[in-house]
Amino acid sequence: MTLSAGRQIQGQKEPKAQIQDTASAAQPRQLRLIGMNRASHKHREALKVAQLLAQFLARKRVVISADDVFEFIKPEALGNAAGSIFSGPEWQAVGIRQSTRLGRRAGIQRTWVLNGHR
Image 1 (cartoon, one colour):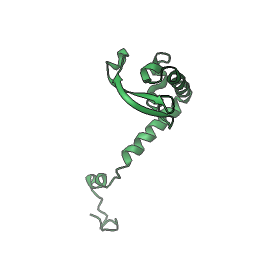
Image 2 (image 1 turned 180 degrees about the horizontal axis):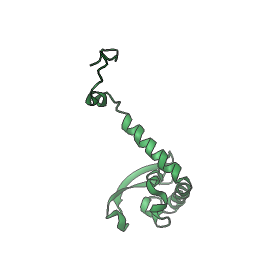
Image 3 (image 1 turned 90 degrees about the horizontal axis):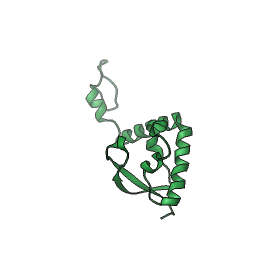
Image 4 (image 1 turned 135 degrees about the horizontal axis):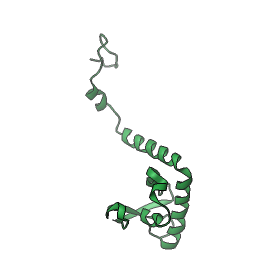
């Protein structure tokens, strides 16, 4: 039980459900960013190579996806950092398409263009 100022009465703790209800709406986004930062830090060299390769491919092919990058780099080299290949203000999502990689089983993925290279 709590008072309006958030102080506890007689040492009783708030129920977990009440604590979770007061979590901010921004928390899932913050946790997502924390996870992306951890993954990209762990695989920073491979991620940098993948990002540079993606920029090169986008200048040649214009619209690309992660499958285009994975033609040249093994996805395992990036781990969860693969989700950060197209992070940054230079990329713009323009659509979706089915993956052509066997491991993705025709899953949906975004397609991207470099800003100003359309």
